[in-house]
Image 1 (cartoon, rainbow, N blue to C red):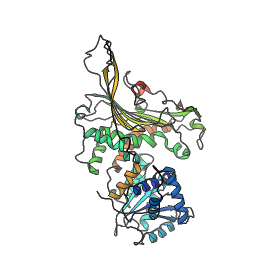
Image 2 (image 1 turned 135 degrees about the vertical axis):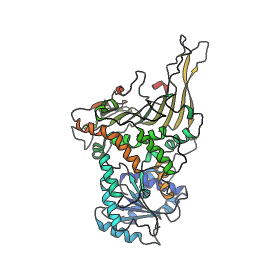
Image 3 (image 1 turned 45 degrees about the horizontal axis):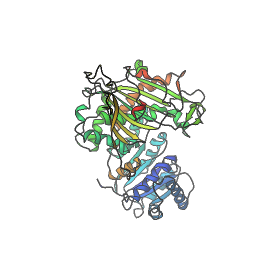
Image 4 (image 1 turned 30 degrees about the vertical axis):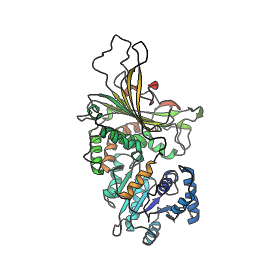
Length: 494
């Protein structure tokens, strides 16, 4: 697909996401000459800024995040794409003025992408104003709307939001963004699985014991207290990012890389996940909250001491789940997922544990055959594919150790691509492969809703864990004594 020039209209352009992700990503696309001629970037904000103030703000955003030396000549070219429109998104006058501004065809490309980098509570109202002022009309060019997560607060609110916005847009116009899917290492999961024929015969219940998906962070909630206390780890990470990783690991080969074929297979996985009855929640999910501790030798506050957090909050900063996929390939294989803040190490990994051989050929010897083989996919910060195997140690004795076959995702001279660069370019191409269809969102909410409802009424206790640890003890999720969380890419940490 070829990228087409468009006008990016960014609501919330002065906010945190725009500062640390959107503007730097668009600048880097311009550095790489990937923004088509005629592409414009129109920021919507409440602040009474003129064009020069806005350009100075964008310069600071980019200089804070630029990957290499700041290129003044590229910024001058980039700055010619930038415009600022002052307006209150709660008032219709903002959209009346916006419609007049965008009608200047000699200044703004008539393909328009609206990026809603705003509170989810404002999605419906903003779309209503855009529709009332005919800003979704496609008489002169296409219209696309990019929506940041979370899409809804639970199943009911997600369905209500979808019903409202479907009054204004078709599904083909909606780009629900999950930046995790834009990461090169996440996309590499598909290549690793489907471009290497040696793995496919092993990728099933006959050979795989269980699969773990982990996203851990050293950071706390920082300045997001109000949002995080109403969301929690289950909504913030598991319902979206980690369930998406699960679908990529577990899906059947799609008939093609076309968006609908890919998303059809992901939905099949989500529909096949065994429902969790409310009475079984505690056997399938666990939550915790970080207390005081230390990160990299520095003492940090507990969650209840963070700004804007009520003293009696039971919002989880750690959440884990055990799921089963009831289909032919995965019947009986548990999928374990966990995420947490203020943990021992920042990393995202997919760990596939293989079964033990049915015959212990080396029983009665010093050979240790109890360590299973693992396939480890490092998402961040270490981007790699690692296969762990048991090998003989050098020497006269028959003793063994774990060795690994490593495949780095990137060569040393190759620079990483930010997920937003990939996704923003896909919007220009009209490629929806890495964006979520509503039935993906809906079935993901169906999976976690019983857990959310159970935790919502259990207000008297939540387990805690020291900041800087690997979270609370939740081994009850594992149904075999030999299983435990894989906490690192290195075998010594098992």
